[in-house]
Amino acid sequence: MHRSRPIYISIIAWLYLIGAGLTVLSLALMIYDPKVVYSQINPDTPFALILAQTSLGAIVTAVGAWNLLRGANWARWLMTVFLVESTTWTFLSASIPASFWVALLWSVIMITVLFIPPSNEFFRARRGRRRRIRSVVSQA
Image (cartoon, rainbow, N blue to C red; front, side):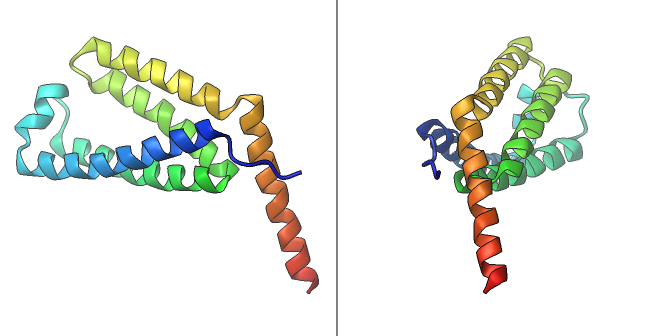
């Protein structure tokens, strides 16, 4: 049985795609004016590390979100690892303690939504559909 994508998976994926685009814009701003970065992040953190973390985050977010739309189960796990990593990064580098709590709450909500039963069914159905297509193609 093929299920259509739950609306909340679409919303999450599109929010993260938009976020990845905004992150690219923020990278340009960081490079143009590094003082902006240090107003929100601990000044002891090396600037190159901040740029690398932000760039990698934008790439992982875009790839993961795009593949969530396609129903790839590995993308769900990628986003889970990314959420845990970004929450940890926020804990270690944020100069405002409330930033960590917001990131933690967001991550818990997103991970919960990615693994509730309707989400599990959607990703399982997409995986089964790809297997059936591969077996039909290999028999031809």
